[in-house]
Length: 313
Image (cartoon, rainbow, N blue to C red; front, top):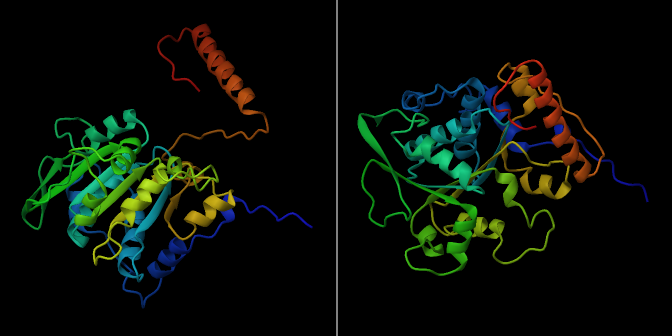
């Protein structure tokens, strides 16, 4: 029996991306000529780049032109392309256009969590991505970091909970006092922003699926309000997703809403020209090569009189 021919990731089809592209060029589509709301860029420190603007337009298409609206989407964008700026814009969009007040940001490492805290909720940080005063339709909008979404919510307020996916999963499956259980996600609509999303597909990768895997926890939250009119949402973001694997492609083929790969990022002039090398070496040999390359690079710099701290390869 002949072995099935492997389809390269760049040849994969993603219906949502294709449909949004067609709608932008269709004179009979309501989406044609859609411009993202002015309040998004007006309330962000950085003006969104063209590709970030396109990502929001694509997402808007899925939430207005497709019925039922997709609850779960994936933004596949190169490292360094400003996914957190995009998240900030999407928070404002979902709040104003679709009435979402509760946002759960999850990531798999605490270091990224602290960085995101500075980006989204710490007004005193130089890395804060919103303007000092957020204003939409003449109303002052407040952003509050919370550990638990309040049952009685204040007007003109966006609530953001930042957590590791480990803690969210533990809180969901191990009942503890003053933590968010499944009922919290049933009571009020929540938009989940999942960064580094490639870490959350353990069971999809055919590893042993336990009842309390991260993926299972996220899915329980996503579907906690499926019987309600306003459902929970899941927006995943990653630069690294292995579409060469059939099981990963099958999970995400109808969820990818926007793609901005590294080669396009470099072509547009936003990134250094990165040399990419493929090898069939073992993981151990790859790690050894990386260590040797880092050391070689460091000693070459020292030989030229360059001193200081060097980021490892």
